[in-house]
Length: 104
Image (cartoon, rainbow, N blue to C red; front, side):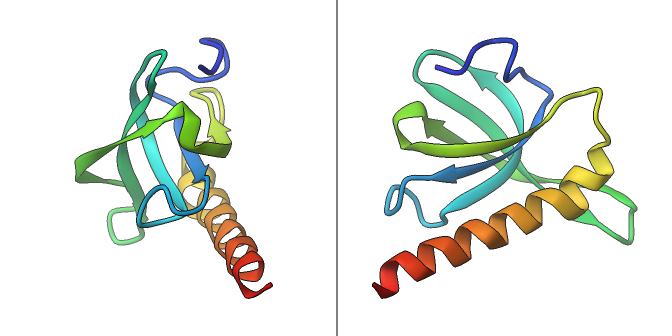
């Protein structure tokens, strides 16, 4: 489990997963709950028309054993930059990395 001071409810994360553990290799979300089993987060994206974070209606639960790495945005960091720019770039890099590994 992630140390409580590293990840907390209210933080935004981009979670890359071990290949073939979920339909997507990376999810961007707002941490809702975490425990010894994993993290539940509401998926999010940036909405340019609203100039804010758009939350999806469903949550995803990611078991710790399926987590490869995470990009984390604490409550002291700029949410807009993370959700609009950094997390989607991270997701694209993870997807490209997974695609390259599958081509080998």
